[in-house]
Length: 308
Length: 223
Image (tube, rainbow over all chains, first blue to last red; front, top):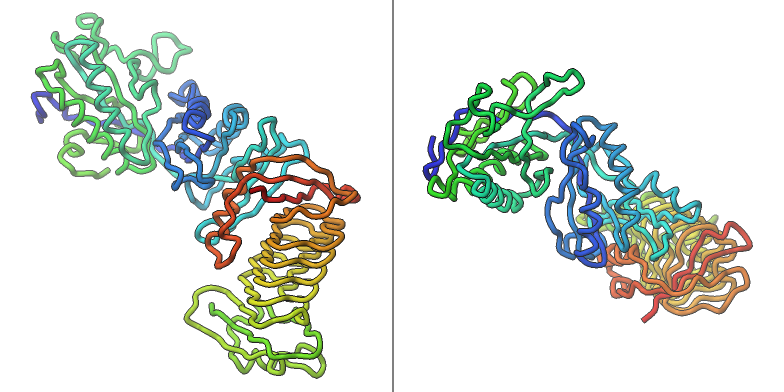
């Protein structure tokens, strides 16, 4: 399969089951909502080292937020519910509670509800106030008002936790680092327009794709040498002589379809630059199909067939 | 679900309305409601015209033409909504446990007494001892309030449009813009009430009753 002169490998991205949640962060203006959300999603690129993968999903208008202020929706993914709960509470306490004017609300409904402000309320040292207020559908929701130095920190008691998928990905292979980065930027711009997904790495792009294991016993992941351009000739490389740079876009989403649709949008945007601009191949990262439950096959996804 | 309407007939005695709650009347026919005893020699039919609209999907009860003779309206209500199109007597919404009670007229003494949860909204004036011993929930008054406001109030929010007389056991916490009020006002928008028109988040906050637990608040809306 070839799109705009870019060859699409007949391979698949291998993804895993995760647990996910969504939080709505509001503030007096978008600048402070971003300050809170950036802090909350900071150091949340890969579960390998961070425990949780998180990112800003999109900006919300005043009409879309519970308190009528500008805000952002944030998605957070972890390998298990316990870690997700732990990370959410820690990040709420360190990043949202501390951020001037910020407030946090549930962004997703589910049967599994996890603590958002339920435990954080104790920061109020007994002066915290609970309010039960019906939402637009008349359903009662509990909020906590915690006295803080800039006024009150407002947070909803719980948010929903759902089953989700992490590790959808594709690799962009090109003739130069600059060209690959430009293609990845185009891909990220396209993918950020879609709901229910985040690309948790810096700017959405990761240069350090990994393989399982290492020559060093203590490392359980190491550089994906087959896709390292400087190792052509040294290892069994996947790269032909023209490829000088490879970058990966990792995508987590609430459903298989969400990830597949975003991968399609991202790959098509990257391929938009075409062979003439140095974009040569699109591939994907997998472990031979042995590790993840979900396989995102590039060619069927790009043909519009979205299935597991 | 249905919308039950009780239109008050002219009366010369006080009426104890505590048996007339949305959940208690659900599923009952007009005749069954009319036969409910309110006192030894008094049934609903003696003091109210009853109508039932099955087409409404909400748990609603509306009182019409009520006066200060109608006492204990919404006493201990656990769900649904009560609309009082008129005045109400003493103990309006007392021991309210959940749901919404809206009174378009004036309320007597002890409105919201020992209220535990839910929302009691009085568009007119409230009498003495409003929110006495209130444990939690939200009580709003657009008109004036009488003496001993929030006497023994433990938790909960008293939202007022008029500054009440200063009281020894309540302390002034100053003026604030409180973000939770936006969410509260959004919930008012669903209601057919003058409360839906409030939009100022800036309030003067009083904490009390310091004679007791001291965790309740009076919020006076600022223009």
